[in-house]
Amino acid sequence: MDNAEILSRLSKVIAARKDADAGKSYVAKLFQKGRKKIAQKVGEEGVELALAAVLDDQKDAISESADLLFHMMILWADMGISPDDIFAELARREGVSGIDEKNAR
Image (cartoon, rainbow, N blue to C red):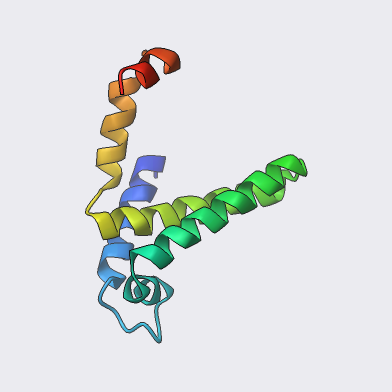
């Protein structure tokens, strides 16, 4: 299974749990709490990843990266964004200088 397939499968699981019982599904519970809470979780996971990096803790950095990606995907789903949308944006930027890309915004 390739990495894009893993993200696609996870995206489908997240979508399926969007309207599930919040008492039985963490994803449903986050959706029920709304975008503000979902975005807060993304921020928390990003900070935890940054701290793991500062502490040079590779194991925690991997774990926190997975948590961050998972919560980002919940946020994407809440906003109607798919992993393919993100892949398309990354492909559009491929071969473009980061400085040039930022200046074009």
